[in-house]
Length: 180
Image (cartoon, rainbow, N blue to C red; front, side):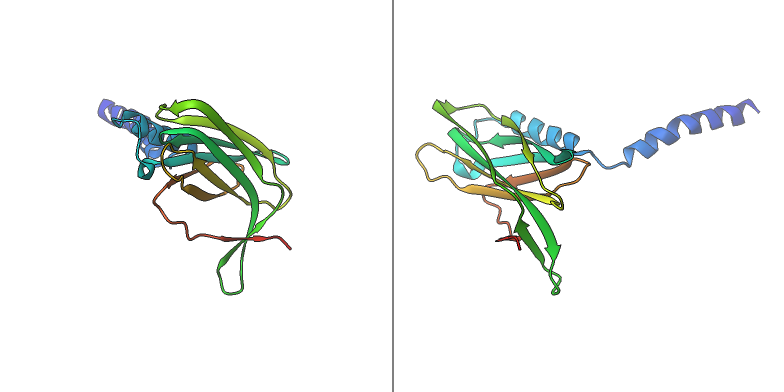
């Protein structure tokens, strides 16, 4: 009998642990994993091809969104653009992204090279009714070379969403057009 009770107790203890291990990783955890990898890499991401950014996007309250961004790459400044979008499927089953509201811009310029491994920024901006995605564009001002723009379209939901973009990746999702 004691063996049955002990087996039942162990089973009850292990069930939540095993069930928790199967849950998907949250957006914040994904961002933390990305940041840890970036911080543990030797060097300062000095080549333009090393540039990347990650974002966690969420609808924060009625009428606004919040984006937490981390940018990697040697730079002496950066520009960020956040464009609210309405994503719809066409009759041909292709995505169509329509601009829905003003572009939120942010940026910084420094007196010297930013050698931080990860530069972080938090943006809060208004989003209108029906907005279901945000296009985020980042351009690092890289010393001695022409900077490339990185673009990412992330769904806008109440639950935070994670996105990652490297400078050399091509983005084929959603041609951005003006709304109706």
